[in-house]
Image (cartoon, rainbow, N blue to C red; front, side, top):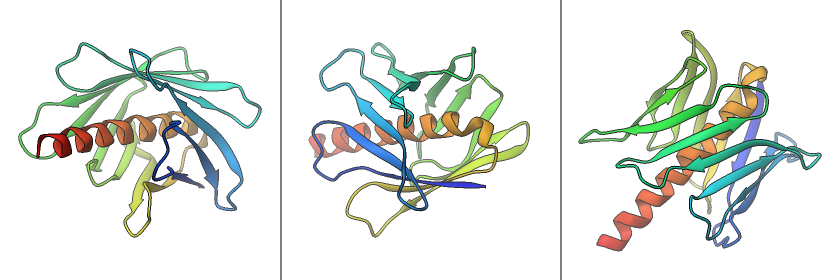
Length: 165
């Protein structure tokens, strides 16, 4: 099993952050578009090669991301479902699903009834910090991409709720 750490800077306006291993070696660099429409994120490996491109749908009632991952010809869509309580997400493509509490960032990613990875948020951290455990390393980039997309949707909802209060 591989363990990763995703930590975003508290006051980062550049929308860039790293994903590291247990020893804090950088494995991925994430770079978000600042003012582009649609909003997108590129995930780079240690050689500077884009391994995933995440694009946020502009004209969608509920948040939706399209994930283009270099290791797979099939695109993956992450779509928020309409619910009255806590948000839930559907994953379309690669036979994936999410179980657990997505909004508190404590969830499991499952493929064919087998756990491939899980995410836990660290609550006593100064910034958004997530422990990512990957059991199927062939799907590592997929798991990382899903965490980045869900974190962005969560942050947008938090910003929207804060602005309406």
